[in-house]
Length: 256
Image (cartoon, rainbow, N blue to C red; front, side, top):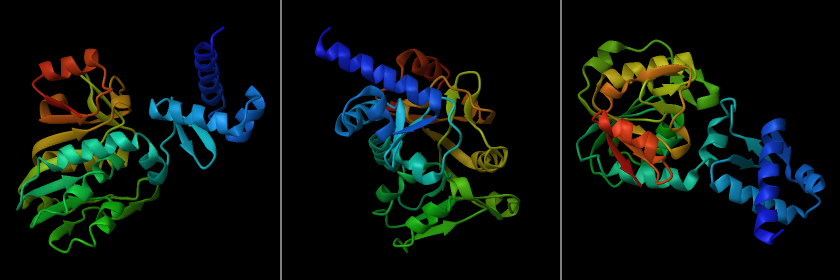
């Protein structure tokens, strides 16, 4: 058996072990496969870069059927892809725009590239987004929602619809747990989805910002059907057989 074959086999076994357990430490995996911690870290890095598991604090977490992890953990997933998506999304925004950013980590990746704009209004229910805009006083931040949802660092609950109704929102950027032709953009939390739906309704153009792992997945609840979508920005690993049917529905899919 060649070296590359043994490497691929071990990594497949590591992935299967993590998926079965939900999470395993580097030490557990090192003992289980009788290789050094350095080797296991290299294996986990390779699997993480493929989006097959998540590395965090000396552990590997399964991503198949995963619960909704905290904002900080989710922000580490597909980080390089989210940077590219954020850069591309920001290019759609113009000086003087009013835009919506949801509380997803992918929408969060847009923020650094918005700050050079001289004038902008951002409507967001994301506490992290609002905090990251504190050093940009030329950007006005409006926050709907009344209750803090800790896992996503977002505001949910009753919204002053009259406030949103007065806003002319050109673009809204939304992350999702999944996208399919049948279900559109979907997510898992009912209160978060309710907020997303309200914000989607106010946008002239709805932009989905999703990494390749989300294609072909349908989470619990739809918050935007394909008929409401103008654009999807995703990364180069997005599977073409799933992307093409979305394009055929008239959605502009930008791959970065």
